Structures are given as C-alpha cells and as structure tokens.
Image 1 (cartoon, rainbow, N blue to C red):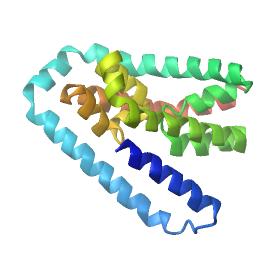
Image 2: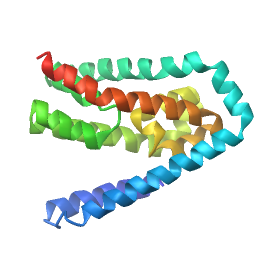
Image 3: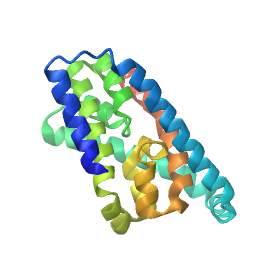
Image 4: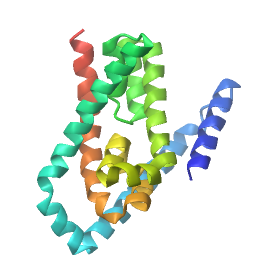
Length: 199
C-alpha cells in the first residue's frame, strides 16, 4: 500500500511539472470524498457491532479526549523546534505543523496567510506525515502502541490512514482514531487562523 501512495504522489508531481491539465482532478475529488464516506460508514458499522469496543471506549472516554490535545501541542512544539533548526520563522513553522496531517487544507490556508513558500512547506510537511504513517505503521504500532500510531497520523486518523492503523494496531484503536482525527481536523483552521492574526 505504502509503495502505491509514494508512486501516486510522484506521478502527481511529474504531471504537475509537465503541464498535464488539472481539469480532470475536479470530478476525482468527488470520488475520493465518496470513498472516504464509505470507509467511515464501514468503520462505524464495525465499531457499532462490537460491544466490547464500545464498552472499552466508554471506560476510556477521558483518554480519548486527552490524546488529540497532546498530539496538537506536541505537533506545534515539534514544528517550532524543527523550524528553528532549519532556519524558518517559528510562526510559519508552527502554522505548517498546525495542519496535523491535513495537507490539502493546511497548504492552502498557510499559503494564503503566510505566503507561497510557507504554504508549500505546510503541504509537504503534512503530506510526508501522512505517507510516513502508511510506510511505518507496523513499526510504530510495535514501538509506541496504538495510541502513538493514532497520534502520528494526526487528523488523518479518522479517514485516509485509518485502514493502515487498524491493520497495524487492531480494531480497538479505531474509535480513538475517529475521535482524535475529528478533533484535530476541527483545530486545523482555528489554529492556523490564530497564528496568522497574532502576528
């Protein structure tokens, strides 16, 4: 799976570089959205049919809410530190990290608020975050457990990386992925906007 994600991303770079028209991408977005909705319905059906998972989720409800907060703070601090090491302004680096893996939205928002260079940084950093989960999910699940894997996936834990997370860490982390991913997705535009208006 991870090989095909890398191949697809590289093919997209080549197509964009050599002027392939982007008009065909518009209907493709609808198909991608539909596929993600089907995936979420399937995951929801599996969760709803497994009473043990629901019972465990109710017992762990406090942890489910703490996880996305810790992931958001760690992402922002890590991005600021990485920006300092690389010589980028800390606010732009934090805005890139505030994408929490949602590269399509963060690239556009950061680019609009901080300029095209910062937008490209946000896009690439968050794309690499998602691809890293596809590639290293089994290793991360063994080293840091299901919660750590969900944290690494960030906002994408509720949709695109969920199959990789479930395959590597088991069905019991699916609900944590849904909750964490949903909260982080809501935080993306708010956090980037706050970083922009406080400049």
